[in-house]
Length: 160
Image 1 (cartoon, helix red, strand yellow):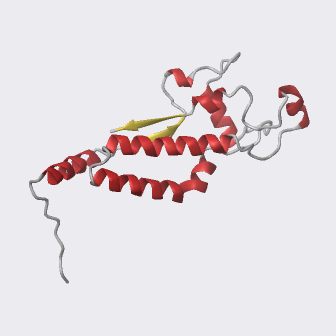
Image 2 (image 1 turned 60 degrees about the vertical axis):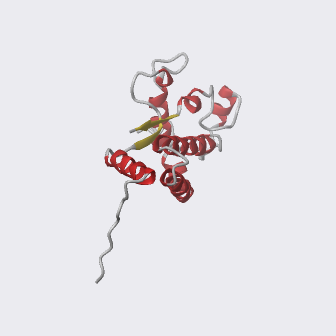
Image 3 (image 1 turned 180 degrees about the vertical axis):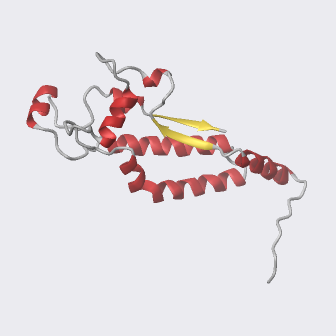
């Protein structure tokens, strides 16, 4: 069986590739969702002691007492779009390898795609439908949208 070897020449491309390999060994990440730190996007929800992160989690999994049903907006958007995200990430990886994007820029663009898909899912009025009393109280039949604070607190962050 023949073995293959990768030879990196001391060219500008070779140096760029070595730098990329060093960055990748640090396990760069792109995170999308709700911050857990005390950043300004994880603020308390209006007229409440509850953070937007907690509200997002309650909607994602539902309340244990059954008063709020599960309306998955995080797991479901990702599961429904994983192939799209993978294809986009592969294109961005190619751009990093050919030097037209930095790793940081590529991960940032992947994060922005994920954020857009997540927000689109939230705006899609995830079932089950709201109860008539809830619709009357908030004046809308859109699930997960009342003040827009939870929607607007979702964010993305690149960690290299």
